[in-house]
Image 1 (cartoon, rainbow, N blue to C red):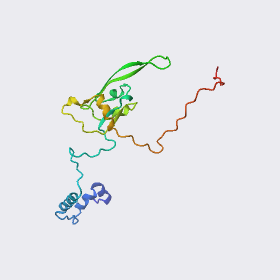
Image 2: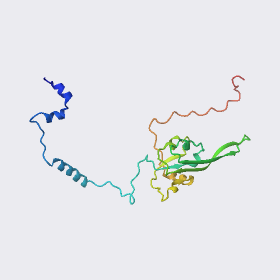
Image 3: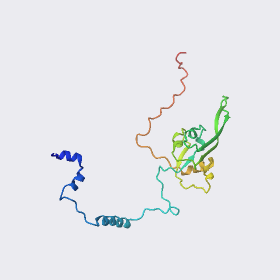
Image 4: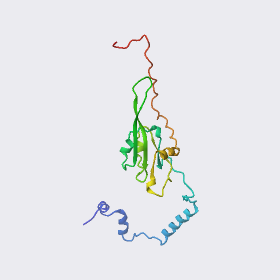
Length: 200
């Protein structure tokens, strides 16, 4: 039974076909692979090392690295959104309501006041969900990466420490051209004295 060339291509890959055809075996010289490997080794021996000896030296971190989570306390409204969205439940928030007198004899408004904000870095997996969901920009990524402790219970950092880490937050990048939204129109002023309201 004769087999056509297209049927051979389907049955046997071309790489195997070279070894099957008689008299056409590929000949290799012993030691070529060893010489190539030694050439790569010599090339890398002559290039300068890029290894950083960590305790004595520190390499600059990338601009979007995730080191610590810093808190801007005055922006926090105790909405609890970050604590609810945290998959590890490592954010602890406590607060109370305070009534503040408003100007002009109006009724006093109630505001949330932040009493405690703590993050347990022993549980945190640095997913960044809390930073993303915060509607008031109270949480930021900082670039500090060496805040280890000898005791795991000391990895719960309170509000004071999180506020001090704000200096580690890099400045925001400049917006690209065209990223700015449309110009905001100024608010309309009070109606003129001689103009009557519609429907009056």
